[in-house]
Image 1 (tube, one colour):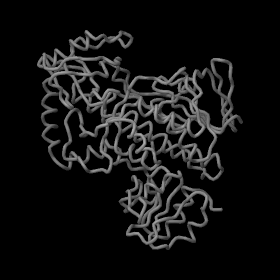
Image 2 (cartoon, helix red, strand yellow; image 1 turned 120 degrees about the vertical axis):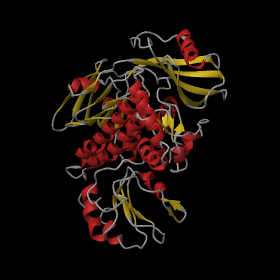
Image 3 (cartoon, one colour; image 1 turned 90 degrees about the vertical axis):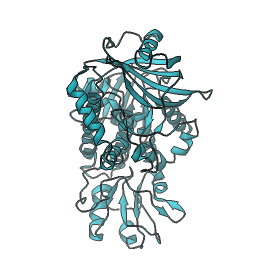
Length: 479
């Protein structure tokens, strides 16, 4: 074996996975077909759950020190959810994907893990012991496992001939990173009477401290083939169609055409090969959910691969990656399609659709509706189908960040191991049987006992007799 895990694709998903494998003490190789890191911002928002996960790894504070990344108010289909502000420790924040990629790549390099660039995958085969990957330059690499994090047009997925059902794109819209002048709204989804629309969201600042915006444009006659370049004139005309002379284009930094295709891999696991991020699911980028879903795929998969490599993974553990993450992305596709319809991104102008949006706008004024949508869009409402969740409100959900004397419980996850919160010191003897996989903490704290997986999800809370079975289910046979 040349390495234990080969990660194909050095975007946010692949970089996050490489760090998770590093924490697990698993040798990994990270390759990318590009000769250098992309300078395109692509995604622009980071959910509460993703920030929480970065905090659990000690990465959030140094990431935020890289610039001015304003927090914001969540929205659904362009309708703001102001009542949800302050619900989570980490609010929705605007951090461009290019910043996250640069930060993670530099962080990994400092740990001795460098991206092998200009490595275009051309073939793969697998057997009962591992995967053999071949590259355009004639190179060959053998690994125990391979993870495809190589984007929506995944080479790995194509080589596997993996099913990728869903809906093809029916329209294109313009997505651009811009500097705007004039009466610029902080965040809006505005529409003209003749069906042209523009969405504007904050995207942090440029090196000179000037505000950047993510701008999306669509409307009648604006759906052009993806390969047609987006021009400054087209962007200026699109702004004028919606805002008149109130908003002007000062600088066009980057623009591309995106489609409303919605597809998801039927299976995330193919023997020793796993699909993650956009290689597993693609959709219209609404609500900053694509990059976040991919990062959280990596968090879910990384520790499980580590367990398999080290030989203590229960037989079912790697399969839980699909059973837990596939429903999450399926739900994302559904809510994105619903938002696209409510926003009339295809510019149908259908009067019944306007009536539905008016009704939905009224419903969104209700606190319970805003909280439900916020749980969905923030990632904090993701609940995995964990055994023993019945009657236990915490099990299957992200672990709360408890104050345990001088330390927070999330800080205990920085080693990438399981954590048993044991306030009364009742479970020392049981936990001692998994000393290389689970840390025990919280003695003397005012907290409920719980077992937290390395990815930050509660997998036991409740009856003491259920703790040992939970440890065995997630952390394998004891020593």
